[in-house]
Amino acid sequence: MAFLGYGAAAALGGALVYANLPTYLTIGAVAPTFAHLAAAKLVPIRGGPKEKEVVERNEQFTADSLFKKGPIMVMAVRRPGCMLCRREAAELHTLLPLLKEKGIELAAVVHETRGANEFKSWFSGGDVYLDTDRTFYGPNERWLPVWMGFLRFGTYSNVYKAKKAKVEGNMEGEGRLLGGVYLIANNDIVFTHLEKEWGDAADIKEVRAAVEKFSEKSK
Image 1 (cartoon, rainbow, N blue to C red):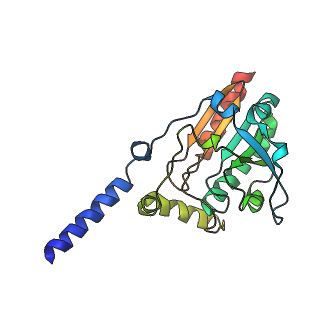
Image 2: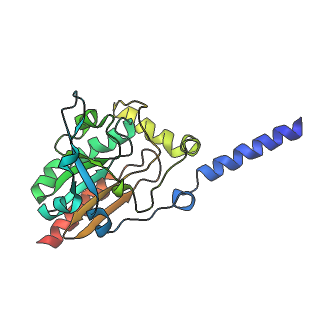
């Protein structure tokens, strides 16, 4: 019996170690190119925060159309109902005055419509689009297994931060597909953040610095 107990403890320890390895080693992390993101097929998600999501497929367009209008910051949302994603959205929203000053638009893409309009409460000032082919989540989609997500120490640290910020959420929707944040301008990706685990938000100071650096180069 003791042998079985040691074996179970060893197995759990091994699972903990594996789950907390850098995710680029376990599920990969390949940053997309500008050409890849430009080909994304997007559809506007209509409606207010308390309204049902309306998606008209005949409104579909490619992301290249957005990029041609000027610089834009795009958040690829892992799950609209997630408190961790909402906290990141709220942090990005604090940059809205700076983005407007620098002529940079703000937008978000989701891979499912459930909860997308409620998400807008934390992302006012930016449009939300359905990424029909999950292009902004590629080129190699990073799916974090549920068991691994729950065993990662960072998950609980991120939940604490979200609760401290008094951000609420729910458990509805698909939350395994990791997202990211991109600053896109002049046919290039100026800043990239690939989510490494649930709630791994882009460092707002790094995002601000990237915006300022881009602005200086654009002068």
